[in-house]
Image 1 (cartoon, rainbow, N blue to C red):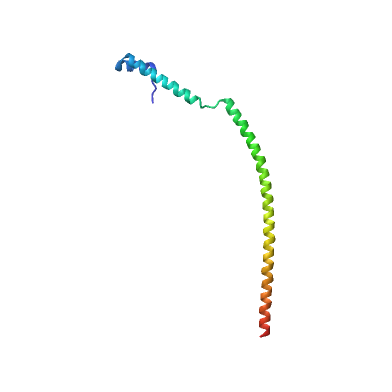
Image 2: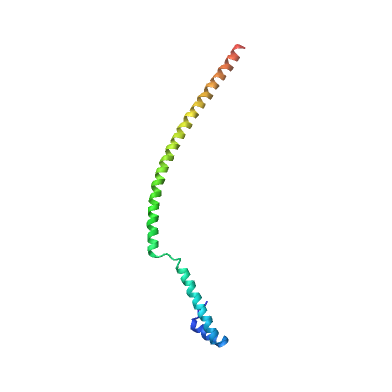
Length: 115
């Protein structure tokens, strides 16, 4: 895409539509370009903005790391407690199953001995 200067555009338009219309049209185009450029540069971040956001980000990461470690330690403590409870409950049920199996086996043995 080739570019064309405002002066060249004015010269081309003035031959076709007249000097006054060409001048008004090129002024309109210049104003529109300036307005668009200003509106887009308002949203750009400056070096100071970027530096402040970097500092805030480092502080946020440090705070998050501390919070995460504390949460992780607390979560591991809860997990350890839950594992201990589950282990003791599992051993209790294993003993109940083992004892009932012994009673059933002795019952069958006594049943066969009596006959």
